[in-house]
Amino acid sequence: MELSWSTFLLEIVNFLVLVWILKRFFYKPLQSVITRRRQDIEQRLAEAEKMREEAERLQREYEGRMNDWERERQRARADLQQEMKAERAQLEQALQDALQQQRQKDEVIEQRRQREQRHQLQQRALEQGSRFAARLLEQAAGPELETNLQQLLLASLAELPEDRLAELRRQLPAAGEPVEVSSAFPLSADRREQVRNGLQQILQNTVHCHFSEDSDLVAGLRLVIGPWVLGANVRDELRGFARIARDTGSE
Image 1 (cartoon, rainbow, N blue to C red):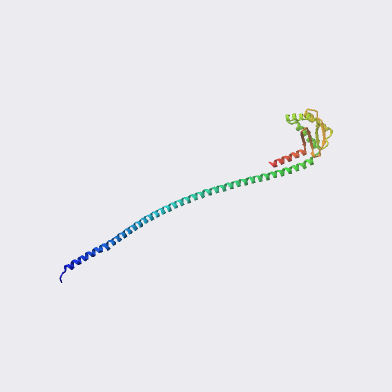
Image 2 (cartoon, rainbow, N blue to C red):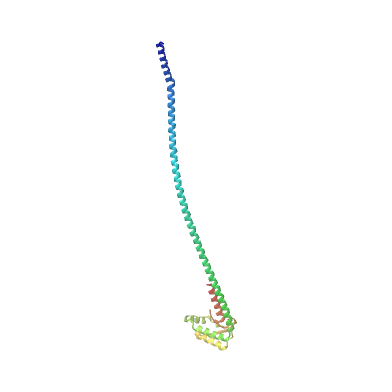
């Protein structure tokens, strides 16, 4: 087999033309596509890395916020418990104060009730004593008792303090009226004279008396000298006793 140099050269030329054509129309576009593809992949990988870093940052922020929220929740819970404790203490103190005030009111009411009860009992006892004394004195009343009361009245007048006697003596001429002498029983002339003389000695002046009977006195005398009313009789004494009983009961 003979080698044809012309054919060999043509084959070589054809091969070179084929290489140029492949390089010109296939290899370079393919390289360009591969390069763009690599750049696109690298860009996407960079964006993915950036997104991952952003996600990790967001997660850290979220965890930080969750921790902050948990601390805030714990603090708010502690504050709420403290406020509830303080409010409970205030309510308990207010309740204790109210109970103490109520106990004091109850004690005051009970003391007032006991005081009123004692007063009622005292007044009732005094009223019973007054009625008993009235009945006793009414049964014992008579001329003899009245004579004793007359002597007691004159003796009491003589024992008055000097300033009161002086005032009583000034009232006598100023009144210009006789001394009104009331008695439960009619006075004899001797007893009227005794009364008049006794008054003149005590008042150191001439005394004119007007005698009258008042059975309501039960026993004893009552003298009216100007604005002064002096008495030693059962009715006035019983009234005084009843007034003392009433005043004692109202205290």
